[in-house]
Image (cartoon, rainbow, N blue to C red):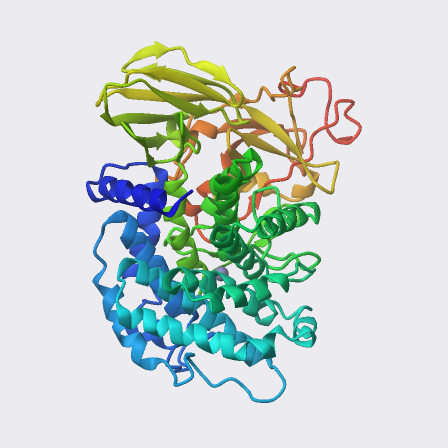
Length: 596
Ligand SMILES: [Zn+2]
């Protein structure tokens, strides 16, 4: 996609958001995180609190990652402001206070060491790298010479210290289990260097980006967010250079993440790659989502869109707290445990930063058609036709596409039929409309009129997902959502011993779909961010009293945003075997498995 198209989309989306026209889950979720950053807390993102890592003033945790919060704060708010058209006055204020804090050599924070490279040096690199891209994202919004000069001095500092950190011995030394202070602190700088080259056309920044890209490798126990940030940087390097080796490298590493078992079934990357999987991280999830959207835009290989969608409707939404923060949740054998952390020092800002790119990916344009890809809110346009999508997918498995501008010519609209939908049914202005089936899509070609309302209804499939490592357990997907049971809505499902519970699954039909019964939203479930379109009724034998079979409502884990932080989720279920040999305690005569 060209830069021009990016800007066109941003402008269109900005107009939509400025007029309050978009109204769906994605819009509500971005507003929630934006409000958190601008006026929520604790902690409050006051100017001093944000800038403490640039001074540095060690008055809160992680100020040794100098520039980290400062950079992400500027980048996230500037990007949201640019596409939404909102005025965010604190941005200019914080940027003005940041510039004088720059040290003589161009970096921010405590001095670099002069001897052997230390963990503190790596932390400094990390924060300053995040600050470089954040400054340049702010520069896109406010292109002033002062901001560019500041970014240049920081880039020049990286160029000056590069021989020290490009040293293979340093790469080797920090490619172990250093996690947040690993070699990723250096490789994540690529993104800012490529952007600095775009802004200045100075080749030395691109040249350093290439050197670092060549030294970017995935390894066990690596910090996934840092690694995927580096991959996004390398993809930007490809976009700037058109050198196919960089796209190849990103695609190869993408495959490596998956084949190494580091993409979890809910579309999550663990904070730390195997074998240290312990919890998720909002930053990693946001990065993985953005990387997949970027790869989709560059290649139009549907595997990237499918993966972006899996992460969006499951892990990314799940990861967002009711406060609007993003962060960490402990991963358990059963699913997700009760420990969590609102990571205001990184994930909250990185999560917010991802939203503009998701809106932008609702549609894509091709020379001969406009395509609606992700069933979320967002604007789409080709010459002569503009549409706006408002998604009510979570409520009624539908989205509405409104034509906001149309000329007299015929235009083709393609609507993706995702793998999770057995059909896509169209209604135009209240009348059924037959589309033309294409590979993975339904197409409509007609002379559109401003005000036309096309309703897209997705017929949701229910699918079984085998556990990647344990053949005795399965999860259930309905539409794009991974379903689970949580301790807040269904505490008795977790009655001791929960590991002995057996669920009763009907046989799959010829299409591979599971005919579980859709459930109406009958209990007092979460109001905001509820997805009743996906609710299913699951019969089961409780572990401790199989003599009394029960049913439980399966809900999307995306609803985690609306429940208490410490709520546990069971995602992996042990099905009752059809011969009954694994539930010896259970009476057979009068309690035939429901639908079994
Ligand atoms: Zn984080």
